Image 1 (tube, helix red, strand yellow):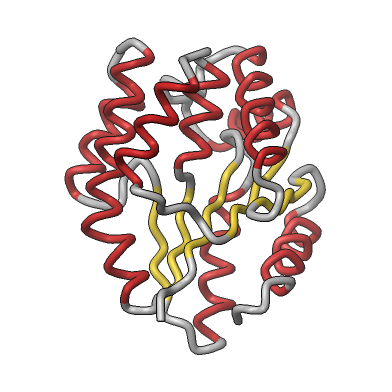
Image 2 (cartoon, helix red, strand yellow):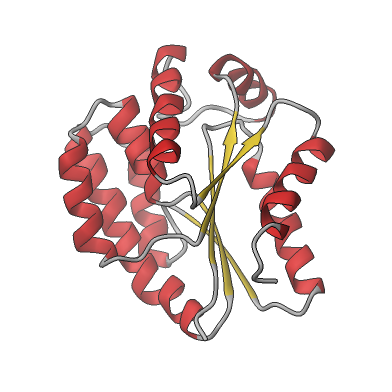
Length: 204
């Protein structure tokens, strides 16, 4: 039986990364084999491409092509084999991030992104996407408190407002797949929302 594919999405600083390991532990305690991974990244090749995307100057098309190249390698070598084994895959970002960041933030052609999505993923979509929704200003405060910014995190508030709107558009277009998590309260309250969304699925 194919495993379940769960993605964590949200603008930088929304707190999604701090909850992915907690969900992995919750699932493993219930007997599930879990792969925790991320995008861009998750393989040796994809991690090299990630470094370029995060730190090297490039235009939006180059950025999108590198992200999808990393995604293809990730799917072929990690995600699809894990799902075929029946594992649960928890991925920190997936294609919704590309539509939000390159499409919404950069203003890149969504039609081109959709074509790349079709070529690279061949129909593969997450079973559940947890979108950690947070105002751009609050996310910026959280990022500033914990790390130096990368090329994306140095963008202005208007960029992140467009990214957030990009996520909202994806969620509106596919409400059965998306669960919206209000990321503004304390971590315990965010976890409670996440767990409720997970437990509402009859998979576990």
